[in-house]
Amino acid sequence: MTGGAGFIGSAVARKLIAETGHSVCVVDKLTYAGNMASLASVSRDARFRFEKADIGDGERMRAIFASFSPDIVMHLAAESHVDRSIDGPAAFIDTNIVGSFVLLQEALRHWRWLAPERRERFRFHHISTDEVFGSLGAEGFFREDTAYQPTSPYSASKAASDHLVRAWHHTYGLPVLVTNCSNNYGPYHFPEKLIPLMIINGLEGKPLPVYGNGANVRDWLYVDDHADALLMVAEQGVPGETYAIGGHNEMANIDVVRSICALLDELRPDAAGPHERLISYVTDRPGHDARYAIDAAKIGRELGWAPKQSFASGLRRTVEWYLANAGWWSASGPASIAASGSARADRRQPEDREHAACRSNRAAGCEDHPAEEIRRSSRLLFGDL
Ligand SMILES: NC(=O)c1ccc[n+]([C@@H]2O[C@H](COP(=O)([O-])OP(=O)(O)OC[C@H]3O[C@@H](n4cnc5c(N)ncnc54)[C@H](O)[C@@H]3O)[C@@H](O)[C@H]2O)c1
Image (cartoon, rainbow, N blue to C red; front, side, top):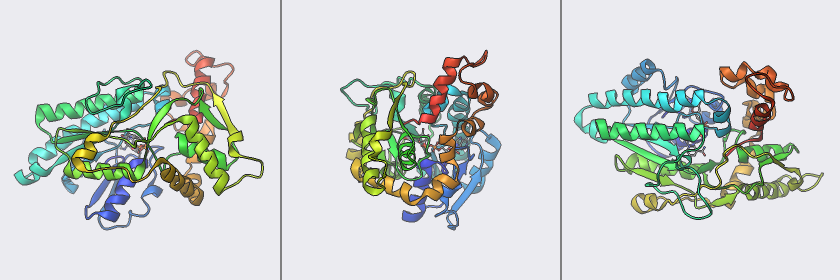
């Protein structure tokens, strides 16, 4: 599994070790988004192995394929944050497109060398997003056959990787599976993303910044429900097929934030007043997609998957987890990254780091980063979906 130290990958790894007999080799570069603490409960298991490696490093990938000899590749490694892709797209091209290409080539090589019955069983499962489909109006749903219309550097890079994966199936016969899922939330979610950022800021009495008027709609899926769907697809999916995965939980961002406030009021009341007082509206993200919604009928019909958590039950679990696990989000650093511009700048791509100084001087800017662009990128601190 690539990207297994990230939010969704670690949920899949924990599930694989706890609930199945599979052996798991996690391959992860440990970027700012990777966190070994998310794998602490499985890292000592005899069936678990970890390789710190970049999926773009073909030699390392070849060596790992040779020594672990997987039956299934679950490919989750990616740069995944839309706002970061607007500020520094290079890493998205490197990992999501070039890295996926390198991994496909090494998977193909591995698959061709397998004995016939193992070749028959082998699967390359590419985990992707509903953002490749672009933005919906008030009506309609994304389905497996919806035309691609990505709008951000992130979604364009994921769309490119989806195309490569399908091409390796049609051209070389590699048995691939593709899943396109809606927004995930749950425990171990890096605090630059909307839900954990709002929980942590709310706990700390800091502003809860909401893009635009908060009307953008997303379809939310609890991460363990996504992990269940991924295991079903990896083990039972039909090679060459795509499965759309969604939570049947459409919510406007502002309603998500209000729900978090209500849970915090109940579980950790603030003497200063209701948490909704902290909501503040900030300038919208450029090209912010209006609405995503998934029709997940196919995976339900063909594989029998359905989400177990409603948004209310999943959100309560999530808030309770962040309340009980401050050690994960504070000791591992992400909260301080979300809260500090300079810490965040240090974790950006080299071309961004070069301009950390001009970013800190927001009024003036520099030749490469006019003041408006700096103000826009400062919104990175306000989280994303
Ligand atoms: N989070 C969502 O809501 C969501 C929804 C649908 C699909 N997805 C997709 O699921 C996958 C996982 O998402 P996530 O939210 O867990 O992401 P994440 O950012 O939390 O984790 C990504 C992981 O990939 C690793 N990584 C990054 N570049 C790498 C490289 N070059 N080589 C090896 N490892 C590398 C990181 O260290 C990190 O552990 C992504 O492909 C994403 O596009 C995410």
